[in-house]
Amino acid sequence: MPSLAEFDIDYILDERARELLGEYHRWFDLKRTGKLIERASAHHYLIDEANFTGTGGHLKILRPIPQAALDLNRNKNFAQNPAYN
Image (cartoon, rainbow, N blue to C red; front, side, top):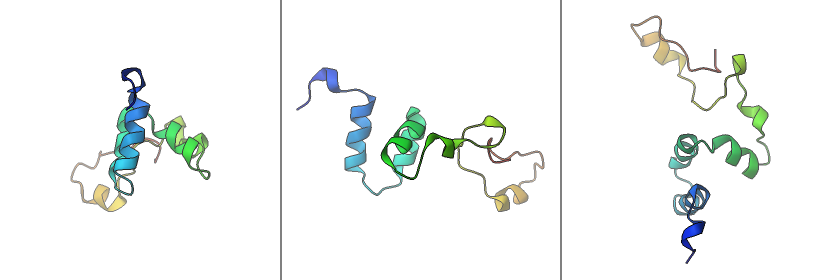
């Protein structure tokens, strides 16, 4: 059992990774905690921080809105998420 001092966000994210292996929750956990870029680039050999740089210097931490959904929206001023324009 880890000591109380070892219970930080990284410990919790590691534990959730083991518990929810292969489930879709991982991306949301990392994005919500601000660890997406750090963890993805550290633990996947094909990903580095440059992969998250989008247009206009925005980071690709939001998923792009499908063009079909944008086309169906009655509000024609509805913008694509930053970094995908």
